[in-house]
Image 1 (cartoon, rainbow, N blue to C red):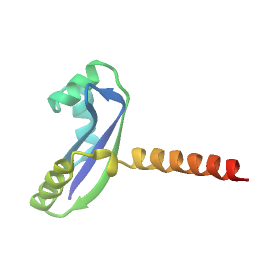
Image 2 (image 1 turned 135 degrees about the vertical axis):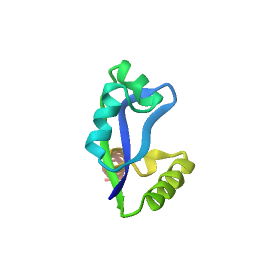
Image 3 (image 1 turned 180 degrees about the horizontal axis):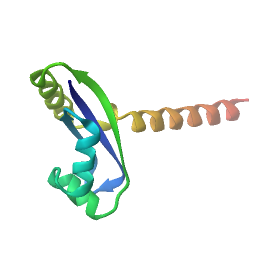
Length: 106
């Protein structure tokens, strides 16, 4: 199995807030990223001690399918649209705003 994952950064590193990738073993890949043997971006994030959270988004039987999905997600350039943590935060902000509007209207 191949897995498409997104890593959410606790705070932005320059312009980046996420890293999207594929791996056969996401736990091992995260260890690689956290020890400096992953991508250059993740190495820079590691050196600044920014906390990260990995989410597995999808699984595929075939490397080619997983790679195509990774490329598709990266082409969107808006990882916050598919990052579970960002989607949850956006939903919470929306609900707070809606509650305030309802309270003002009452």
